[in-house]
Image (cartoon, rainbow, N blue to C red; front, side, top):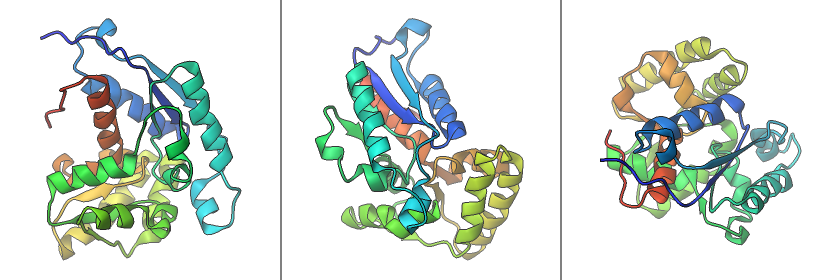
Length: 237
């Protein structure tokens, strides 16, 4: 059945990093219930790679990105966006400071990813994220509030390296490293991994690991955006 083009406009604050934002836009296009151009949603993308590093800010070694992130989201609303999203997990450490004051609804990647993880693996999953996201307790707090549990990964420096490799355009190398990390985890406990940094789904795709054992934060946010744009829609895995 042909879809009806959404009347609402989605505003996306990207650039954190650029490859993750591009993949998010691809997911919106390929997962939308549309058969022709005119049935796809209107999306305003503001890609701002100049936003200060989020993990460095969490660790106290870099500039605070809060104002730059807020300005970007508010600009998207001024442009006419009815719904806002940001495909960067660590950015939500700072977005949480002002999200309630945004002029239009904001879809929260952490909440959507935790919901997707619970649906796939109710007994828990491995959490792969930036060092900033892990240290902030962003996912741990959200999981605790809804009675879910994540298992911590010991090789955090290696996970962070996977993120950095994707940002540097070395997805194949990142995938190889991620594969070794995840296979070690599965020897301990064979449960899905949550790629809770938006570079990590790209690394996972390059790793050759089973698609069905990954909960992608990019896909979780894309699906939430599409569900808000197309009432009654649900992506079939």
